[in-house]
Image (cartoon, rainbow, N blue to C red; front, top):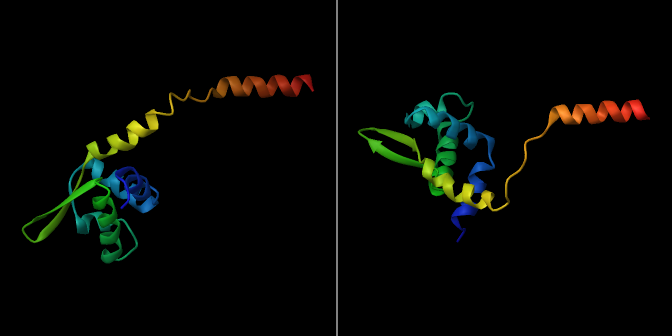
Length: 108
């Protein structure tokens, strides 16, 4: 059986699933509303939602006849904690890079 970290990164590897998570940042959504911006069948969206649910990134619940999706922001903590183990990455210094390139071009 895959560990939680594997399931999370596998779920995040697909651009459609990342877009779904972005949509759910706004608010809970019915499955049909989640499917609306995508050019794929409701069955295909349901498969993506199942992957996200199995990874613990979203929760699905039935409210009457409608199935709703809700983001579970705490689920990302496992992945975040793992990534923190690699330390702090400095942001790219574009001004410094530009100055280096200009100096290199002048000196050559």
